Length: 254
Image 1 (cartoon, rainbow, N blue to C red):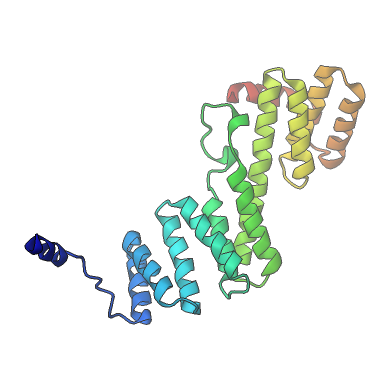
Image 2 (tube, rainbow, N blue to C red):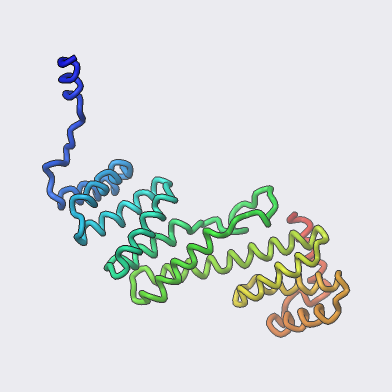
């Protein structure tokens, strides 16, 4: 039994970083991350967080670890790490980057209709991550307008706004095509109210106008048409030919 215990102890994995300084540990972790070795980089950053606890270097390691988790697809863990960081270090010099990275984790380049549209009910597609990303970017822009990340965050906010508006219009169109005119009008109205500056509000107003017409709500139809004409005086939705063209494209699309 004693010889077995000795043999077992001999197989214990040795921590090769035990004699490293925190600076060396950080540089090695950075190099591993730069080379795409994210799993090893993550382990090194974790060790650095423990050894440099209470220092700015430990904060940096925590942020870098969150980035590594993001790159390896560990979205939930990355968000948890960033949320904890922002809660514990709200005045950290890296708080702006933490917000930016939080936005990036939730950001999706294929938002709404800008990506391929899956064969599923559009009303079931979750846009919460997009909204969460927007809030992180907005907080960054509002609190740190001079941040090096603020300009890109603003660009992404605009992209998200337009994508969410397009998503709402797609859902409204989906309902309209299936004869659910009340749902179509409500969803289109939501798009207009939330995303007034988006180009998609033009079509949203048109869907409201047509839905109210189908429902026999003359006053609401006229109001929607008036707003459409005021904001988009050259809209093709206001001409008979343009209307026919647009409605044909709807059926071809779906």
